[in-house]
Length: 219
Image (tube, rainbow, N blue to C red; front, side, top):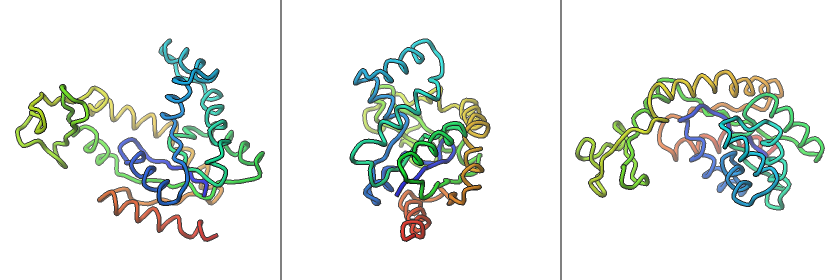
């Protein structure tokens, strides 16, 4: 299967992408991984991306599209893939359509993870990270520390990252609504969008997604 995964920040895309890719036996291709791999390997696209990032600028669509095209041409992606974070806007979606058409294939589904905006804010703004070890992460509502502000594992101070502040989360949501959300309508016009609720336990959301994708899989 060839799937695009979309949803607002805090929808659990990364977690669901990993489970779905495993269950469907297809590679999980995320924009973050593409950037890290290309920059660490020193590819031409990676060097271009690093130059923009170091200058504090957004990486142009053509660089991101080039990385995605190269990754989707790898042997493990011949029979399918799950895209996470790409396409990020309608221009990238149109470029993806051209890429797939050139290969004589097409998308099977666009899985839209739906989460109410206030739940997104609660999920992200409630996170607290240990200053001593960033691998120790807690949540004020879902997995609170035994002692407020103190890491259960090492006693380090817990703090809220700037990226997790409510103001930053709402800014990220606005960017999502203006830049990425329009691709849902773009793909809906092609009859590809499957929307599921991303509320509840991780396993329940995965089961919901697998059930929603099954008709496409059988088709």
